[in-house]
Image: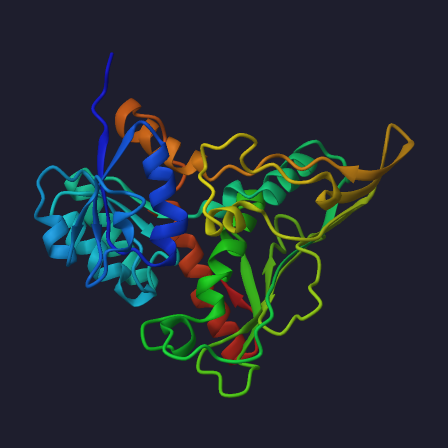
Length: 353
């Protein structure tokens, strides 16, 4: 049976639209990229000539043929624009962070349910090569009982980019919302909702207006008191720390470097190219453990990264009725934990969830 393609509009054609959304919508045969909001430019015309350029979100929402809208605008607009799209009867994907507070998240979730619409959050790093590999190692029990999990985004830029909302704080921003939303979401996928949070969030760069450093500890004192979960990010790591460090009763896994999909997309590669998301062997993580009492030491093959899986799941949900893995109802817990992290850092104490 031939099913109608999902006619899709993108609310912005900045980096997010160019890199993380348009390529995957365009190359997935179940979607049709119909409209792109560009307020003054026409950057999308060269790569996506069949898509209509519109000048505002209301203009995009007025198109009755558009079924799905991607809200990938600055953080502070996510709530307002997602609400507008839902009220216009559109299914919605919201870029992370979902909203700036849990009250906004709960209102949008209720609105989507009332209207029978899909509301998804773009947590694409669930399909990073390194994270998929970490999941496999944990699920196989290769490290024994896990006692320490450290997840880090290392960045280095010792100056503030001028006229950038992520750096100036004029429309949201800050490392905890920007990168913390990924690390927290990944941790929830592995370990579930923590019972408490302890965090240190700071602005370390000279002249900084938003937080550019965090260390968040997710605590599970009742369910798993032996496990230490640490999430870190900083803009002042000129020598990067490992992306993942896992220690267990049988062994350890250490992984450096980042998933290559973003780099490939920025360079102009498209996600339907052969060997998409595959990592060079030299970048595989190091596994040092034992299996059935025999030592096992060496590079552990990384699973291919696959951001395609996000949009494939959206299609399967909308057209085949399958569960939505990035349902905002569950991703809203990320915002709840971020709020607790800020409170913990400010009050210098553990915050119970």
